[in-house]
Image 1 (cartoon, helix red, strand yellow):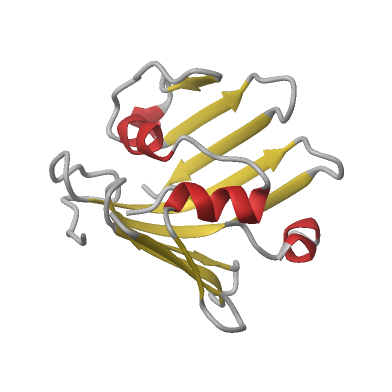
Image 2: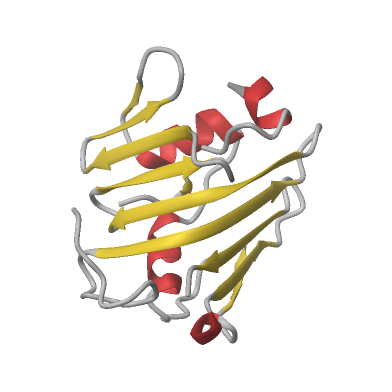
Length: 167
């Protein structure tokens, strides 16, 4: 898994991202349905300054909220690089091999990146709410134009997350 991160072929929650999260249709690419269920698409880049530095960028499709949802990363050519699905009791990472199951989205990001990402905060930021997140600073000024930047300011593993939403 870490070899995939180093090679730039895979990013975990991220999400993310990270982040990741019930399904809904949007009123537009940047549309917000409600605080529970949302849909975002665009391009994501994450850089975590560990040794070695981990960097990743890919197109993404994010559905849901911090409690339940899914995140799919695709290459510029449309190939699926990874998919994450989660709910309150589990997070599952799908890549080329067997699915990997984790107790939570935080556990998944910690395993794949060696650090946690502020998943709940990410959903708030994407909805335009700048909530205080210890160790992180979000820049939402360009969110109306579809851009979100967030930085982790801790000395042990500084990170930068950049998101460009589809117009």
